[in-house]
Length: 68
Image (cartoon, rainbow, N blue to C red):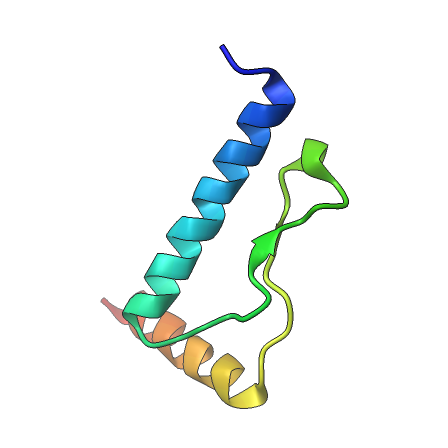
């Protein structure tokens, strides 16, 4: 079995890839999306910065999802 720290990074990386895939499926790209390297023990995903048009598009997609 892998050490816990390695497992955490793997789980966090899987989360990053799942978010990247889901966003890509609706045509949204977060260029800075990654595992937060500064705090591996916390398993944080860094979404990073996006342009205002990307933020507005994401908000629209999320709002549509809540109506279903």
